[in-house]
Image (cartoon, rainbow, N blue to C red; front, side, top):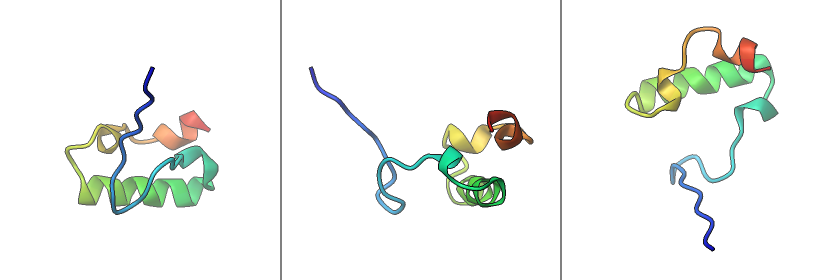
Length: 53
């Protein structure tokens, strides 16, 4: 069995938005939306982090 973890080379592996404060997570999510709009994460709806936390 193999374990794969795909990540953005610029931001690094094993990052989790839930480890950040709400303000930091929302800022990071906005940065992802701006720099990588085609990613699955960028398509999260408004209020996603509030619901997630």
